[in-house]
Length: 297
Image (cartoon, rainbow, N blue to C red; front, side, top):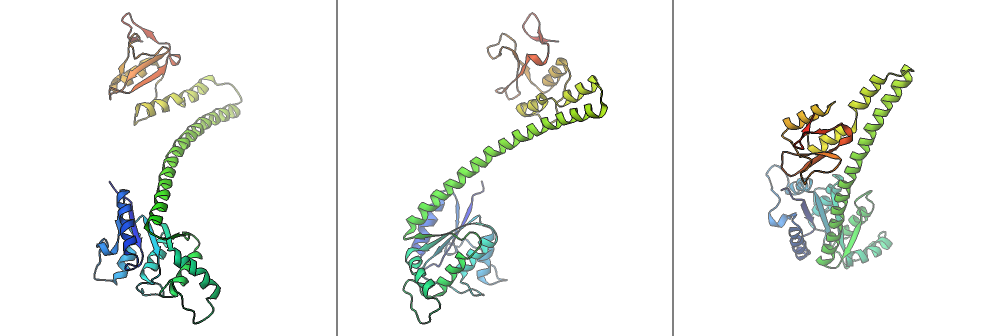
């Protein structure tokens, strides 16, 4: 079974213990962590090593970006490699979670107030480019919410809550699909009524046979039988005999009236799986039973 792939992006030496704890959490969730130091990224010989990191980001579902006090290795442009990993994931529309070390986040306010003043030495970072990138992240149009952390437990707690929320949203979306199907059924019924109204208006006279035909072929019972019995072809019948013949040809078994599974006011059939039962109101047809309480027509 496919598992969500989670790319952990950060500098290594200052955050290796945080990376290890987050990796264990990801594994515990049943997801697949992707870390450069664990050999999870396949490198080739045609491009720079960093380019394979960015390609790996495109193959992942989630990126966890952890910003600490070190700038890290420079890439081929003005960003570090870990900076570019975050930017690449955001550009691709990946689900991104960004965490910034609390000391760095606090000193970032000092940087904002004094960034136009030369000669300031910052204590929480080894390069002012860290703050310049944080400022760039805040200015991104999306995926730019930064969460403070003091240790790996802060990151893990937040991810646990977020991923639980994603799962709940998935369940909610599945529920909405059923609502959409109901709306589609109502739309189909509306289309049938529109056909009938348009027919009456255009003809300006009563044609009972044609009206009955429109109502019959669009009766909702056919779609319900298809859905309940999981029949892949279109169902249509005009008499009880046709219905019984169709059900028998599909391997359905009629339940006699005195059987304990029978339901008063309905004709009941056991589906081929031997467990499921489909019931049809007797009001649909004028049903009759023989002396052995079996269906007859």
